[in-house]
Image (cartoon, rainbow, N blue to C red; front, top):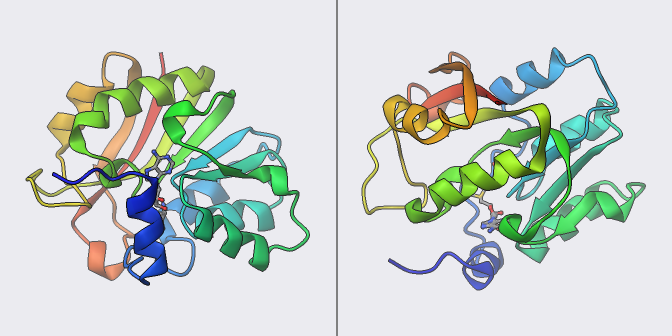
Length: 194
Ligand SMILES: C[S@@+](CC[C@H](N)C(=O)[O-])C[C@H]1O[C@@H](n2cnc3c(N)ncnc32)[C@H](O)[C@@H]1O
């Protein structure tokens, strides 16, 4: 299996191979953000790519939301779209080396982009980045995990086994408002730090 490192992702952006990019905030994430009332929440969008979910948070006035990506190009794209934004909110870093404290982590097609052997590390890293009672919420794919990817699949059972020790599984169900190409293939979830 190739290594999905910074060079791999930089290359995908350079070759215009960001097929995961939906061009706008996806409905499940938008609906979740829309019911958040505390605009001061410290929110991280890791592996945020071209940052449509992050941009939505910014437009909704979540002042303490940041995005992070290992590739430079998508961060530059977001900076261009949001010229007034404090550059400190666009973090160029490896998720696994990032240290800060958040109330909420928003997940969309980052977990599935990682080599499956990093799943345990993702779960423990997300746990360590969250304040007590903090949450990770978003979308996980619901199709069989094979050698093929990214995106790498997974199942409800696998996600419960992976996250269940350190997180309370508050919600994990088939998303009803997925974008068409992902319909019936993703789970909306909220996991709360134990
Ligand atoms: C499949 S894309 C998804 C982008 C975005 N979440 C979206 O929904 O459009 C995966 C993203 O994760 C980033 N990435 C991969 N490994 C990373 C890591 N270790 N730390 C931070 N970002 C990473 C890639 O550069 C890429 O932008």
